[in-house]
Image (cartoon, rainbow, N blue to C red; front, side, top):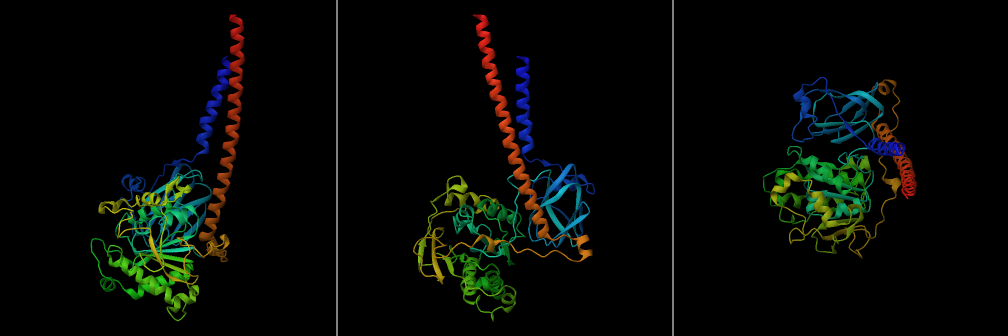
Length: 456
């Protein structure tokens, strides 16, 4: 009997430690060049506390080997370098929430941003299975099924309802989100924006406009918006986005600004003007030369009365555990915590009905059903892979910089290998433990029967 209990104990230990091994653990980051107060700014998980420097240079260490680092920048940094194991990786600073996976585990790494920068938090991990809060952003789409222009962060859910959860999260289409305004002066809105999009199933990093949001200033007319912002510059910017992403479908605001917001009116007006000129190489020739021209097959405006459709946001989404598309949009809007003070919600009220759209412009005919993708086919997978850069050929550059494409490839390879290994290991572990448990149960039954016979 003692041997049986010993075997049972081994099984339990294998299950406990095997399960712990299969999962990923965040490890403690140390910053030897910083004071305790400065280091606390980078490890408290709070977007509102920031470490910044005019010439940022950080060394990050840990008692455990570091396989990956997750850097939460407070705002878009200038170009920066991450160095580890004698190699350097150069980044252009476009992605605020940046995951970096090293080819092999390192004892330390350094972050250098010569022009300065500010960082909210740094997380380090000893494996490539990550907690749910870690975002693995891909580059913006090379070509998009759908391009969504939102005037502000949170409009993508408040005004467009289940559009992103359904088309990106449920159907897995390439949905590229663009914001007309930026919110870097309104922290933590950029982080809330990324959390909401990630939760909605968007994997291609959004793009930000060239004008700042002006909080607490009501703008009620298009003419007022044009007087505040440089309309032609924004039109040139968005025409460039159309040519860059070559979307099958564009979705944007109501020309009357939903509840009357002037920036919403301007977003709609920008789209209406841009789709008429994006195929003309003489209009904004710089982006035409860079990306080529593009004529958008379908363009939708919120509340447009012609060719009107009512989207079904009560459809259930398997990717959201059976939530309706509207409930999924509500869930994603929940990440915009700083905006909840205004009392907005995802709803079907008259000036906010997130189901009502109209086909403003089409090259493929009128809709036959309430589906933004009606009469257009989703892009083949191979056409939506982000464009890669050629390998560097300069010996000097190879010694100091590895292109971000190579880092991305290493990330994908490491994650795939780790995930497959962990899955296989877990399956074998559970099979072995299950067999041990069955054997022990059978042994207990046999011993029990013998004890009964003895007593008889």
